[in-house]
Length: 427
Image (tube, rainbow, N blue to C red; front, side, top):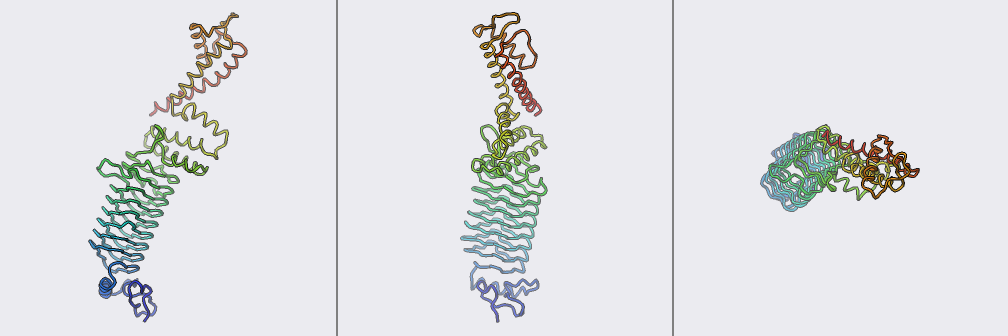
């Protein structure tokens, strides 16, 4: 009789069916004898211990609640009915790579070892990891969660979910991530909530999180509530409709930013800057829809910063953006144009007095050493800036050059000041 194709796991022969290569434990037949399976499983537990369950197909509820495993290998196992691991303790390792949970999976209150793997596991029904404790590396790469999944109050150190698919409701309410979390290229296709509990500490506190290239459908499916986003990377994730409530954004100086801009110090490629610029534009739209205009201003500033610093932007475009930044902080800083306007006013006044400004029908110029003459010159300079065309004083040929420059620069700076004030008043 032929050995089972997974003989190294079970030590059993294949079923009598000539077309079959599996024993009763590994048989995928929907109608396999449950009593025979139960007896074979008991012998397996007695003779081979409680470590290797690779590829075993459980036709009935598998109850391992409160069981203690040393090195548990459930890779490629199939659970036709409920899989119950409530309060289970995994000491050295736990591997569920490729496992299929056709019914509900319960891992509530379980304790996992430093290396835990659920790579390419499929959860066809509800999965519960409520208050589960993951000691170190936990890998859910390419997992598929077909129905609701609960990680409420679970504790992670380094959680990896790259390319995982959440097809329904996913709850990370009160979940603790103490070191890092990776959701790169994940798919969130149902309502998903990352939220802190009533404890004042936010979720993801001081944690590095990769949330790049994430697919969110519909666009308003994901909510971050009371979350620390100071080390979040969001590039290439559409955030136009994501809900942000009571979140903490990182800062550069007094300006709120996204962590991706801080990370731009490590990546100077044009594509990277374009990605962060697009991210700021989406956040700007997001907060504009919510009438949070203060955040709109901050992210508008960030959008322009990324375009100005992008090595792929044209030289002339970058020059104009640099001037726009220096003069008014991209139209968001009203103090800057006010200060620049004062500088232009006083500098022009000084140059008029030095180069020659005369009372009409007089050959004697105003003196830079006379307070009264300074006042007259300042008044003249102010009217030039506001395009009032003063005619009570005349200029020397050289001073007229200053007049021309001031006639252009003055109204421009005052216009930027008015724009910035308008931006703040409408908020």
